[in-house]
Image (cartoon, rainbow, N blue to C red; front, top):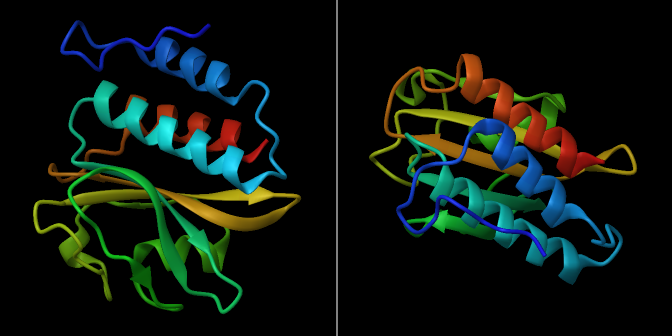
Length: 163
């Protein structure tokens, strides 16, 4: 059984602890079963949202057949339900297939402001069998938040979820 720390206001876990918890949550999940993946993404959103400093939103969007993104599990205030193809930071990650880090969302052309408190954003495209099928979207109320250890942590989380 995995122990989740940091969510109840206790001491925040280290990045290493968070990665161990992500690995534990991933164990036994059938990546071909949408319901299992959805449950995993709900737990990951909760874990990261409750354990990581300086975040105001953590969640997933699923890629639809028409290229739009539909909201999945998240931790934070209500968010945009649908992100149209070709618009915003999340769609940029889908289009390029690469992690996108925006230090100042107000300087990003076409940024979609789902939460006016967000100042910086990181989006990691999640792959299954080599194809992007979802994105991990993380927002911070601080500009330039996703550097150094934060960037490293969320890149490693994205890598684990794409395996």
